[in-house]
Length: 320
Image (cartoon, rainbow, N blue to C red; front, side, top):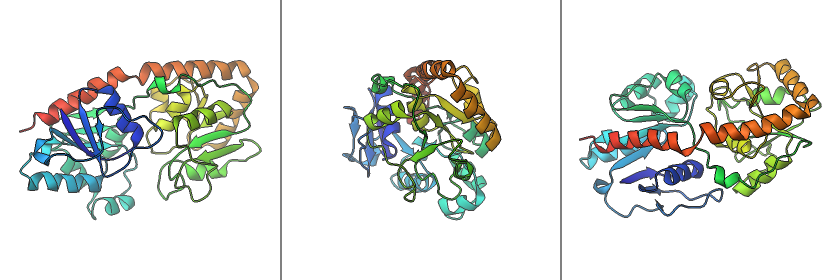
């Protein structure tokens, strides 16, 4: 099978290629990042006419619009185009700039004639996505072999969060909440590109992330609407204890005080209390480190990711 896609996140592309090695993946018009080795079945150029590909992927509304039109112009059934929803903020103000002035409702209707993949069950719920072909919620696959060398120890000086464009207007990553926190109670640093000069650094490679996770006190996620991204899950794979709000997927995949600590969403005092409990109990810290790594390996492994994605690819490729 040959799958054509505009280039997107290297981490996601790596997961697709490793999970389905018998598929050839063509991720074009981008570059392969340093945080993942490039699998043998990844290609970065279009080497044949569109008619010779079996399935097509789009990763945001404008891309969906242009790719759908291109398929129609080439006489290809547009139902072979899969829409992959990574973004969890169905905000009307933002949306009109992302889909040529059209409403969210119109976009949902347009994509209903295509296979849909969402990286979170909450994206399906928030957008009210439905599909006449197939509609799958497929959480991330975290390749544990990339993080086997990680070794976390208590005692780091700062909590961390890793988000691209964290402070962007209506990003949904909880930047306003993060900025309210008292440095004396929660010493913290934000990492990632496109952060207006306010980031402590950018992480180019998996080794960079492993090094940061091993030295940090813990990970504090503050997201309001964004789905769980690779960075917090990868840090948990490194053994870094996770503190997250009790919203979206966090309370569904993880258990409070067993493999994660949950605080009340958008409640500063709840976070302070949770951090205080965490810092007072080194045994809890170590249990969270071990159990967090174990749950990532168990619930974010390759098998469910591959099985669900193969259902989507089979449905898309069989469209006539």
